[in-house]
Image (cartoon, rainbow, N blue to C red; front, side):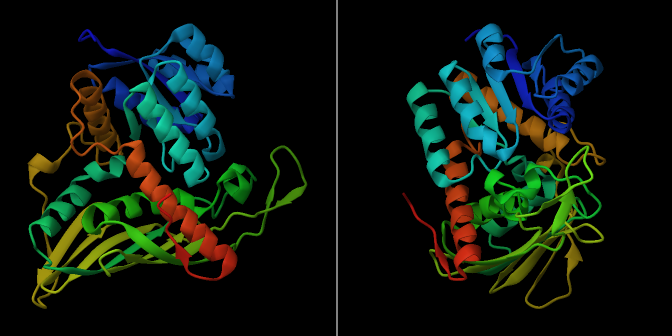
Length: 355
């Protein structure tokens, strides 16, 4: 492939376009040539804002006419499987939002087709490249906490607390719910630190039980959880707990590692602290080398997404895939999500299946 910018198509919602298009534009090796959304008016507005010429509301027509090199998929969860397969069949490389699909069967099919097509396949775990997350993992690998015994994670948000409109995020059958929304990045981090999760015990709640249908006075029952807890066991015997909610009055994130020598705690993806041998926590500043190429403290994930794009382009051009999250990583996470959903439905421990 010639070393000219890759032609990128972004398929998804207006919010996804506003989050991803600046990332592609910040890297000289990618050029966004088209936006595609079922809401064509919103896509046209985004195209005007970012100077993108072509806009579509039908992804298959877009693939047939534009033939992009790389497709970034940020559609609602229940649509990712079909869009990804269509893009792969059109010869495109893929970056797909996480989780990849509704279940492991769909995710495995996506991986199988991507490998058969010999296309680069990436799942958007851009949080890997946040300075705090990145250095957190490096310190753990260097033995700062010693042998890791416990992992504790919390992700509380008010994202759904004041939202009255019912949409796919309120429907469990369409992949809505906080387990799918918030858990994947933490499960991915746990896999990288400790290996495979093998068992999950999960509970869930629906605090906001009804929401208004858009442009209607009628109410629709919410079937997707807006709060959940996951207790996970790794193959090596370590334990991890994860508390999630989208209806809290404030926002708070915490990712902590506890070992036999020390503790590392990352708060709100910004503040890293640690202690060893029982001392009080003290601030740890990640070295500058762990910052992504673009750093915007107002938009923490812009720089990490640019880093993901850089690594994707390197994989496409040169076959380099170091620290690049692929569909195989997405499938590992998907199997844990399936086990968590099984546990919430049965009230029993869910076993993570490897097939």
